[in-house]
Image 1 (cartoon, rainbow, N blue to C red):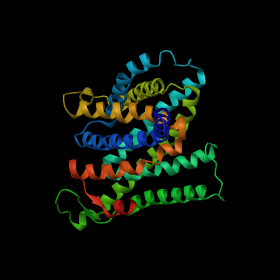
Image 2 (cartoon, rainbow, N blue to C red):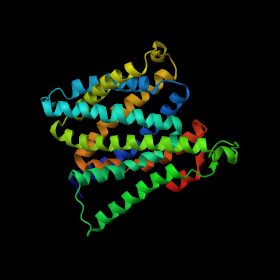
Image 3 (cartoon, rainbow, N blue to C red):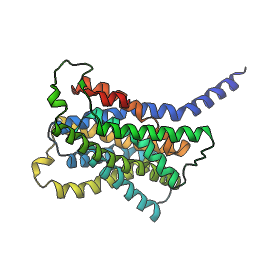
Image 4 (spheres, rainbow, N blue to C red):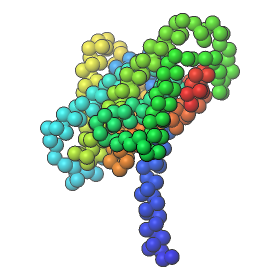
Length: 318
């Protein structure tokens, strides 16, 4: 075999594996979103202000790369694309992040990442409705997708209803049965699950719309930057109404800086860019299929870093 043919095969292999490698790597980065998010909420930072700083830092980090790397390939902005970007900025940076962090405040990072596993099934349903995904029930592939959708969504509902006994992977600690099964604890879990599921619907809608927008505006870095910019502007309007005290906007060299920076650069900016690349090749359903990996990483990090307890319902869901 000649060197040219060998190099050609390697390039083809890498090209085929690229979407998988990008999404697997992204899941490890996204795990930090839940850990930093829960940590910053535990410290009392307003989720509205956190979302503003997160999307603002993502915009600042991405803008130079988008400006210089895509200055020759960036298409002209049209009114339909502009309106889609505004709506994308509302769906994920505003609606999804607001309700996800609200649900996380009532539960835990590992619980939130587990419920978010409903996103692939919701995305699949929306994709079928808008005809981005074809469903042929006679084909094994379509049957597997339907079964996977039912199992995934059923697991999310199980998490909302059943909590079970608690245990910890890395830390020893005792939790009384009364605390585990108290009505207050169960009501918080149910309310948190509902908020997170609302965020999941917004996130799934975001994936669908992003897959459509990236085809009309094929400049992934610029699109990610504009989504973050729209999200920063829209979340600022919400935060100014929700948080009127100047103390809520204070920033220091602590969690109020590193949490928005990490989640902004990785979980917003980089995530939007990678998702845009992958969805242009494989579609929105493929991009959401790797979420369970993030759940496993978050469960381990949540127990090790935050000392969170896992519950039997979470393990069954995994």
